[in-house]
Image (tube, rainbow, N blue to C red; front, side, top):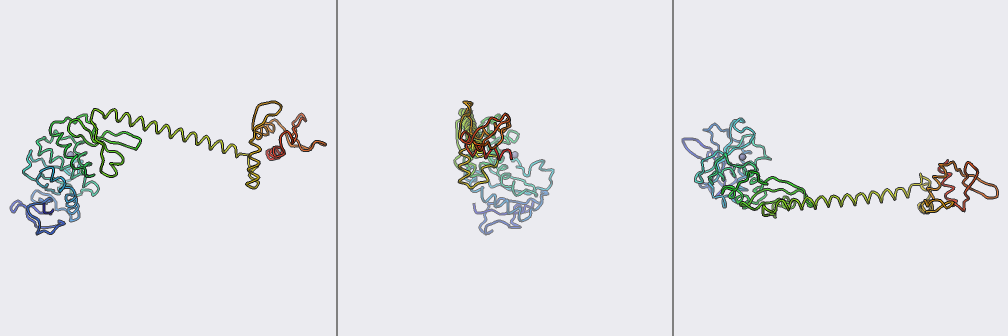
Length: 342
Ligand SMILES: [Zn+2]
């Protein structure tokens, strides 16, 4: 492989380097070519930027794939009519099971930059399956797309091994490719098959790095998914419990600090003492144990009001004139009642 070049094709002259836009010194280019504008087939000449895009994609991936696929370098043409493509932006022109000829990939002139790489890899997978004798109508689109995704992340050997498995008659109908589930680490996805009995699983970390995909016997996949999902669910429940406990603790703290603004008028030190006094638990008249604060709130609700009884001093007095003295409730509690009824 000497490099990549864009050639123009004319039926009379064959492939001629009429217009060179490749990245390498043209004099180093031998018989190796990748992108061709076949104008005599009615294809449009690509803009230099689109041609460069294709060339750079090929320069990235082809040297890796060339080694393991044993295909002639693909010819990439820019096609003319949108209707040639239906919903695709590229298509492989099937060449009937030959690895002796270059596969021809036709891409739309409007080839979007963000789809170009995966698209070309996808079409290369079709070309490879074709060279392995798999007729086009038998190509599995999910598998081919999965090849593109794997190659994109640099897992070339896995990717080709997966196509080999398919070409050898591995039935991928109902295959788990594309299956996704939640694990404790995040989303996992089956991105390929190795031979008949192993699956390649992408994990959040291998998705990030392109390496370290998890390979698992197909027979263990269901158990793995089940285990992952149960772990993820239990981690979720644990997080839920922690969140609930934290919310409860926060609510309890907020309730403890709540004196309807009474304590908040004072210095932090005094505020702290007031909150402590009002939250201390006690009984009145052998009744239920409540915080002092709650006793005062309940008494105020029953109509008790701060008052001064001659000879006794400050009290919290009820509608029937019974009262609680400061030494029963504390002076702070009576001041708090005054605040509540101000
Ligand atoms: Zn396809």
